[in-house]
Length: 198
Image 1: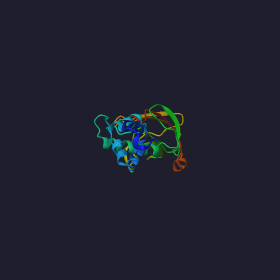
Image 2 (image 1 turned 90 degrees about the vertical axis):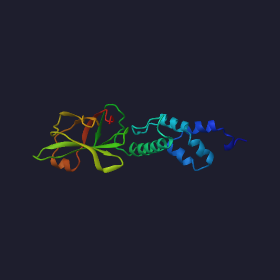
Image 3 (image 1 turned 180 degrees about the horizontal axis):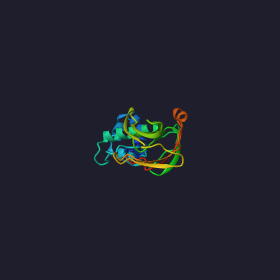
């Protein structure tokens, strides 16, 4: 009769290499043998190559310690689950040009940032758009903010190339927004090109 102790370690390594990072970490509590198998670099390298979750840019597969790789992969999976699930009222954007409607926000999925696109009144009675980037871990303090130089008029498209911080290339197609619409959060139509390059 086949039991767990008769399964060779090579087979266990292959099995764990196909599990999500969070499941691997949870399974370590079962026994010392699983703990030893899941500490192997082979498992985490395979998980790294399979993942679609957003990872930090400083992850280097051959040089990043296994413990750092575990933490980064588990955090990336949690973030991907939270920010790309069905509860997000917009399609996922993955490094290609895509048009979509958004009431107030646009979330990137390849990097841990969220972008809010809003329109508000400026001095002189006009309106202008504002794009604000926040780290997902801290929505209180913006990482970067860009204000459009003038109001957006119906039928006109304005491209704002964020050159200073190399964050994104955003085209906003909008219309004249009256003050009541500003207060209620009037929707914009955004065309995003390579939004996730930052």
